Image 1 (cartoon, one colour):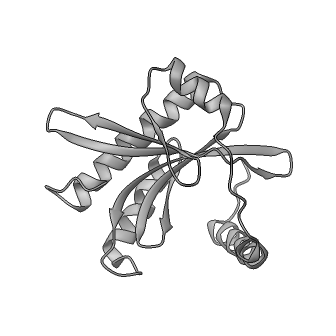
Image 2 (tube, one colour):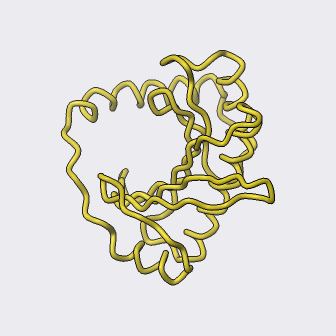
Length: 168
């Protein structure tokens, strides 16, 4: 079995990311309209939601028996790359006191991304957010799985990194 060198893969990923970041950052993001398909799927699943300022679906779930809750966003916008078309499911779990994550937190998030079956941890400003990318035409069952995974992994990480707090 031929495996790519992790260093080559990382270099390639960083190179592609840097090459793409300038044009993408310069583009204006269009305000999306709420995705009717997602709205129907969330309704069929019995989930209550509200639309945020970007017309993304914001859901809040109760987690466990300790009165914890977890926020999940299902984005209306669809992203494409070549023949791939994906939608993102986000769940924030950590807010750094500064723009930079402390080293141990960043390392923990990288370790957790390595073992996650779906999704990975990303840095969005001061926030660590668990992001799962699903096919834009995912079934309601696939959407439900992504939401469930995001809830569980984000809440577990929030509880680990900020014990006793439930801010996100």
